Length: 267
Image (cartoon, rainbow, N blue to C red):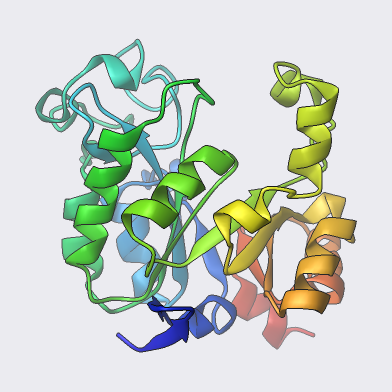
């Protein structure tokens, strides 16, 4: 894995982030029995040589589990919080309409190897207690992985902990306009302002910016690109209008629901 100097640390290369479109939670299609974040969705993305975005949730024993939701209700036949169960218990949970089970980060890394890049979102409940054991588990797994990889999170505390635990792993500043009160109502006006403008960057030291496509162009991504040369990754591109906006204001896309190669060929 190629690395580049970043201060006194040797930072892993992120040029792959802008080389190929990034499949949102894998290249999935629930109607065809291929569920997001599942081994089947990851395999389908690799077959098309797309980079892949996945999500990590925390098990009761601090093992990173490849899953998006806080609860099991939407995508499995079980109910309740992911965090209430151990990794062994979760690995026996079947995903709806598939032969796939929930799986660990280590299983994902074994499957992907160095075939494609992985952009890993660390999910957070924005708690007051630092999730050091969870972050250490992620860092330990990624230290053994030779393929292209980066992490990101909406929660600056998670990225600060990743910077401390694994300074060589590229970190992404993940954000949006922080105006949706359903999502951000728990945050104060000052906190939403800080998140919108990514004022945590001096502490988290991101290597790239991942921003909601519908909020582009925006001040924070533009400043990070102009002043620090950070690439902008637009999420999540689902429509022709999204794609046009991403092409105007970003360096690469996280996509879902279409084949961006086919869309590019039809231009």
